[in-house]
Image (cartoon, rainbow, N blue to C red; front, side):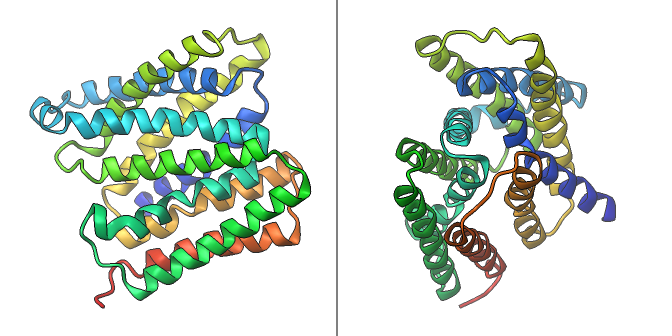
Length: 284
């Protein structure tokens, strides 16, 4: 069990370095995601094949949510990486993590789940945090376009969660491999229509390799290896190491700063989300 916790925590810490890697690459956001999904998808597909291959019956039965989830995955990364550059890693990450709360708010309609008082309180706290963040962006002269793109990334993130909750037969590793492969083709169309195929410079190659093989392939392997053996509530709470570590890494490595209002927004968003997660096992 301790090893499972270690793998899951390590995967969250790896995910938290995405912003740092993107900040050091000269490629467009869509081009970075194209290379990330190519390398990560190939690695996970090979691992699935080595483990016995794909469950064709499950894939056939769940092909629609798998395809839609893959599309949401690719587009959510494109929007998030663009928000990193138009705003900064800290603010984009905080807005991005509003996505799970949108699912929580819509859960009575989407999944026929009861919206408890704790969950509703969590949504209000996160909404207040978003107001703090978005208001500070509007009044401080930061990019309004960046705010909109960050909100778009949160919407795609929420869509990804919604589609993945419809996937019950396909294993986690197989789901990740399929969705990364689908995301590659969706993003390929996007980059062909916008920036064109990537032509990474020599200085980009190490970052491309790390974000594709380590931050996607290895991190997903650790993620699902730990996920399968941990309690659901532990998984939900540990997942917030990702945004917290992203904030810490952006401050230490990218020297980003936040205003007091933005810090309040960060506490409300992350704290509210964690408060909502701790109430998932309640009966009320």
